[in-house]
Image (tube, rainbow, N blue to C red):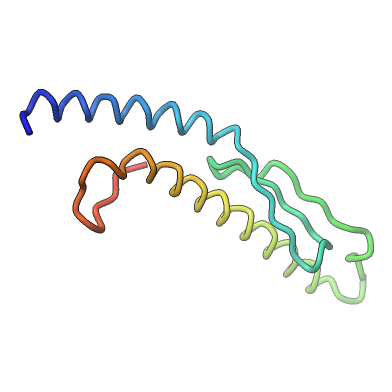
Length: 106
């Protein structure tokens, strides 16, 4: 492969990655914990956008359970956001013939 072609591919990839990152920053994912007691939403640029707590989950005698549910919902939403980002960015780099395990920075 000649160097000019590789440079063009790298420029195109960079442009496409920036476009995809902007798209994904608007993409919202959701994760629910405790059978619907707590729901967290996040964008794929790792920003928490919403947290809903079912009033039935609020038990003054067991605040620790609510804390655990909130942590699980937020962690799940952010993990889903990261997985979505990685999957979508991986689609852009799949045709580049990179060695196994070599990830592009994003």
